[in-house]
Length: 406
Ligand SMILES: *Cc1c(COP(=O)(O)O)cnc(C)c1O
Image 1: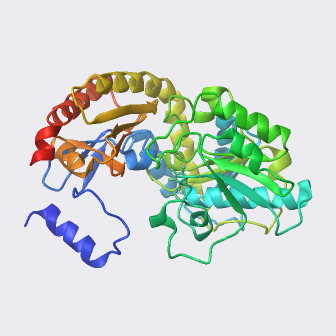
Image 2 (image 1 turned 60 degrees about the horizontal axis):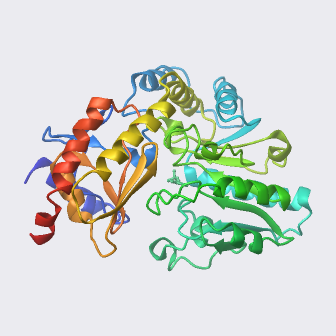
Image 3 (image 1 turned 45 degrees about the horizontal axis):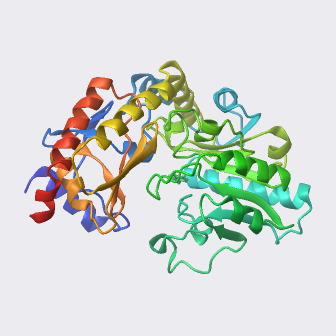
């Protein structure tokens, strides 16, 4: 049995089966390239669901991690630490918001935004406590906590976890008429993804974000953009809402904020809103820890200094054009923004075997639904590197009929 096989068996034997990973073991990684225990190299086209935008083990981020590990790693918020303020100031400058609240995971950032909206509804908007309602979208993905999965429409994520948290109303994605119709006096917020990543890189029609902004302003509800996956240059802008020049009231952030090294998440908003949190009303033991803060500062600097937004925009166009050119009758659509892209196959097509063939060709990608494969390499990918990847993908896609038959 190969080393990889025995490692997989060990994980299957001792680990809960709450994932169904591609059968590949990653032992080492640098930039776009990862290596298995046998020494075979692959290009990472998932980037840990966009948590590795800066590339694996970016030297600047690893340097910051090591230096901070030698000084101080955790204080809790019972005391100040000398890195958190600097991190939050940098994050505010980067996002254009006045205040930030640090947490660890994306789900915690979303939970924080939900609590912020409800608290604002009760304290500022004057909604009776317990009646606050938040509007969300079908096919959303906002994380895995019991409150968040209460409003998931994905049966696997949702079913058998009742009783569910009330206070959410689900409308179709990309439907501003439904949004307007769903708002009543108790509505405090609209929580949505500017591009639905887990749903298969579902793009709203042009104008959706701007219309959402107008409706939220007119009807006095909070526009909460979940940019955990779309943020930090992934879509060719710092944040996906910028594609329509829109500034939400609240953004939830995570994944690439930690530079692929450490879980760091945050909610950003202006002072007027964030002011609803007072001492002891919300928190996290690890949130704002100096190690995460040091890593996040470096992660933001890399995004800025290497202009990864422009790079994602440019290389993403090239990627979509080249894929659309391939001779493969099973492909229905190539879609995405920046380097968050998906190839949609025929409805009844099962893409698992294609992902295995891509793996064998040296490309690691994962399907989001049976028939959709997401392609999201680290944003530091070189143009030549991208071209190599495209040719590997072509070799698989243009032989797809043989795969299907065998
Ligand atoms: C990944 C993701 C989350 C959850 O982040 P975790 O760190 O896994 O808790 C929330 N929202 C979106 C849009 C995501 O893609």
